[in-house]
Each structure stands twice: as structure tokens, then as C-alpha cells.
Image (cartoon, rainbow, N blue to C red; front, side):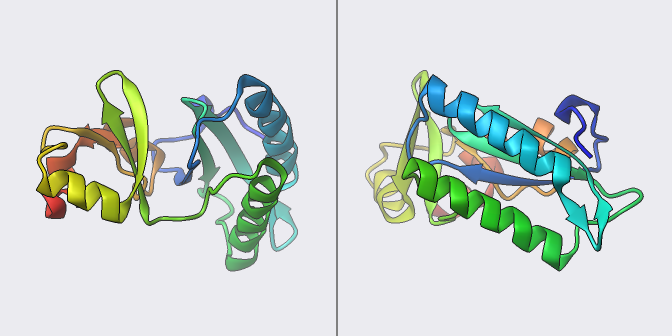
Length: 160
């Protein structure tokens, strides 16, 4: 069952998928429609999940599930990954590679491989104060409060 993302509780489970490139406005419109359709029909063991999503900065797809009544199961999570894989294929983007880092470079959002980001930290091209996107957050509350943080406050700190 589709729910506006803003209506999901703070403890809703979230999954964040980052694109390796900025999506065009047209792509975002299409992906929004496809994601709304997926979320509307998303189920765990035959019961509809209370779920929502948002797309941020033409780069991130955030799926959220209110697990108060029905929890996302292995099969439903697999279904969401299969859906994301279909988007990867349809739009020729990488959404599942967790070995990439997205961060602010001035007012722009940059995307680098983990190896490149590590080298940038070594060369002091990024610092502990660089704002990074911590896609490892697990709940909507964490997403709202700890997603865009200085590298020193996320797992990225090990490179600084």
C-alpha cells in the first residue's frame, strides 16, 4: 500500500540507492511513476506493505517501509532489489554498487569510487568536514538526521 514518504513514521525502515550519475528530469518522472507502481503493489507474504519513497537530488531513490504491522521479509526485500535492478537496466545506471561515495563538492554533488575517494582524502582534496551521504542509515529518522553529514560523523571517517 502506497503511503506518502513524509507520512511514514521515524522508525520506518529505509533503503537508499544512489545513482552513479545524475538522472534527467524526464528519467526522474518515469522512475517516480514506476516506483509508485512498485510500492503500491509491494507485499510481504501476500500482505501489502505500508511503503513510500522519494527521489532526492535526481540521484537517490529512498524506499521506506512502516514495519509496525507488517515487516519487510527476505522475499519482499528481494523483490525491491529486483525492481532496482530493472531500473538499472532500463536507464543504464548503477544503483546497487555500495563501493561508491557521493559527497558535496562545493554546491555540487559528486560521485566517486571508494578507491578514488580514499585517494582524494589522502591528497586532502576532501576532509573530515566534507559533507557525505551516509547511505547506511536504517530508519527514516536516521535518514532525516544523519544522512547528509560531515565525513567525520560517518563510516567515511576511516579515510580521513
